[in-house]
Structure formats: structure tokens, C-alpha cells
Image (cartoon, rainbow, N blue to C red; front, side, top):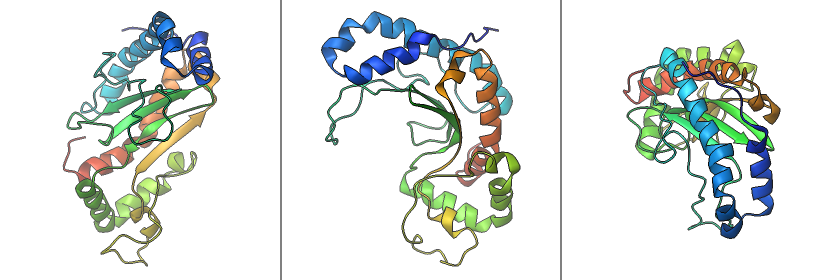
Amino acid sequence: MTEFRGFPKDFFTFFDELQVNNNRDWFNGQKSRYIESVVNPIGEFIVCMAPRLAEISPHYIADPKPHGGSMFRIYRDTRFSKDKSPYKTHAGVQFRHEAGKDAHAPGFYVHLAADGLFYGGGIWQPPGPQLSAIRDYIADNSRSWARICNATKVKEVGGIKGDSLKRPPQGFDAQHVHIEDLKRKSFYVMTEVPPKHARKPRFIDEVTEGFRRAAPLNRFINGALDLPF
């Protein structure tokens, strides 16, 4: 089994410099450095995470391909944004459920940026039908949801989070015991640590523990969506 060595120092230095030089000329001149300092280390990390992820659930994919795999593209979608900067100034890795087609599927996630690092699991802005199914499942399985929310390891990292509606969604009792969660548009459990953690070999152990912490939430979401866990 490949051993994770930690991300190189230049990994975060590259993103620091990209923040200042977010243009195609600079990036194209640094392309080989990007491959060496960012893409290859992330590929190694994904390979090393694969057996650990399989122990948590065999239904989440760890694909080290630099294009179309678990690593998000560095190119920003600027079509509907006022910010036309072409590149993201962080790296993201999503270990997506095998049934998922995009970033809105249930998954485990690692966010790597020079100004912040977090990892965990859940689902981000699922489409309407899936979101409705999750809300119905929470309402129908109130005790199970409470056990997940109140787990010590979940509360240690700030609980279940996600952007919310200002008002209760249509069809749900405003007095429901879980109304604040029923208002959510995303559901995730994330652990935040300083970026320097990523440079240590033990970072992969920290991420594994963070994924285990989020696993009950993902199991619940999968149940709502009739997906295996």
C-alpha cells in the first residue's frame, strides 16, 4: 500500500502565488509546477485514501485521475459570476457516491487552501427531489436524526451545518423538533484544522477520522435517497 508523505511545502505556496497572479499567462508558465506540486500529491493522497475509504463504505469512489476523477478541476466556472478570475485558489477532493454524477451527490470532501483546511462528509445543495426526500426522511426518522446530531464527535466540530432557508419549507410544521435542520439546503459535518496539518504524514489519519465522524450522516442521507452505504 502506498504511504502518504504529506503535501509538499510548495503546495500551499503555489496557491498563495496564484491568489496574486490569477491569470492565464502566469498559470501557463507555472503548469509543470502545478502538476508537480499540486496534481501529483493529490493523486497520491487519493490512492492512499482508497483502502481507508473502502473500510468506511465500499460505495464511495476514490479515483486518482487528474481529469474526471475525485480531484476537482482548478478552472472556475465564471459564466454567472462577476469575478472572472479563471482559477480556484484552493484544491478540492470529493470522494463521491458511486451513484452520483456531480458535486451535488453524497460524498466525503477535503478542502485544501492556504488560508483554511477542512474535511468531512455530507451532501451539498442536492437537487429539489433529493432535498425533499432528505427532509421527509428526517421528519419520519426523528430519533435517528437526533442521535446523529447529538453524537459527541459531531458536536465537537460544531454539529451538522449547511445553508438554510429563512422560513420552514412548504409542508413542514414550523414547530417540528428538527425544524432548523429541515430548513437546510445542504447537510454536512466538517472538521477544520490549520493548513500546516496537511504537510504531515499523519494528516491522512486525521482525514480518515473526520470521514468516520461524518459517516453516520452519510449513511442517513443514503437511506433517504435509497442508496447503499
